[in-house]
Image (tube, rainbow, N blue to C red; front, side, top):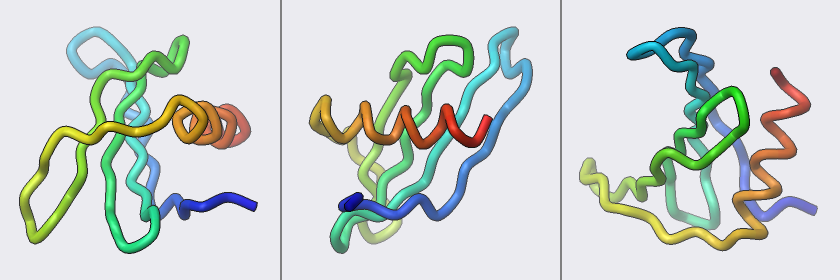
Length: 75
């Protein structure tokens, strides 16, 4: 069973010449925004959102791989 819930996903075609997928998710009580390149799902950035402030997030490789699998199913 997944430990996170995807609350929003945006597929951004041709942003600055590249396509990206941005995922908003909740893990426990924490919200995150994660952006991947659409072509190979390479991680571009990951942010933790707390009280309207975004901070760089350090997420496990297992969690990121699970999120990538979810994205592959949806695009």
